[in-house]
Length: 187
Image (cartoon, helix red, strand yellow):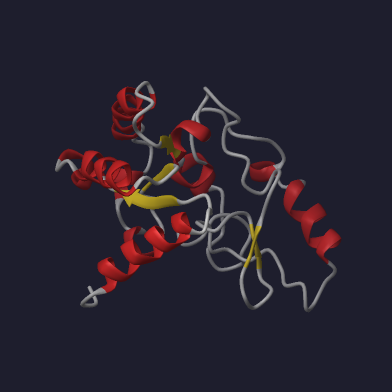
């Protein structure tokens, strides 16, 4: 970690609050960081700093975690995160805590990546979400509506997935080509 970075981030939060902005903290939890109490420490930090919300992403099997098999087809630790958030959300003295796994679960809208939204890289590559690194095309080569129509008519992305993230589901991951960009990559 870069020396002084945390202090600069805190100073930014303090200044943003001073000028009246809505301020939140986003963080990513792994099963082991959750078990080690990192979730509670982040929420307590958010309370001390007076942020308005905390968004907690459950680690995805992508990027440096792409070989983490324990993040695929394993909803138990995400359910633990959701349960841990309940006591903070019941107490108005804490900022609102959104566990992303809740938003993609059967309790909410489910995972709608590639169904109601997409991610575009700085280079124009269109992906189903920012956690799926498979490019379905590039806006410099095809119109966006063509890419969107192609993405949303694929079996994996034509509807929401109830009960969790598509990228964390082996049936979605197994039906995807890493080399052709037709589905889930980085997964």
